[in-house]
Length: 131
Image (cartoon, rainbow, N blue to C red):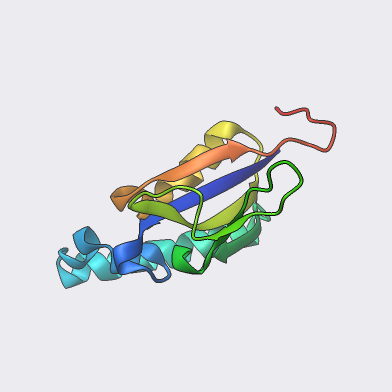
């Protein structure tokens, strides 16, 4: 089963990986910051070697987004993301895991989960069936 991990971040400190720019992360002692960075790299290596990592990508700053909302046959595109919020979608990973529990376990190990949200969502197949 495939799962989408959605990582959110604050636009005030945009950059990737997001956790490296989070004020709570930056307030940690240097040795703790180094350990979290090491854990992140170890997790990436683990899920790559296990074949669970399908793809991952960082997203550009939300100010570069465009949102399309055509109405009554009239194209309408606006600058920026759909939502106006402090936390914006910063990046994603697609995992192929044996269970939702395994996907959630991996999500919880991302350093970003310690400072912000990492959402886990099953990906439906082309027939619209999930799980």
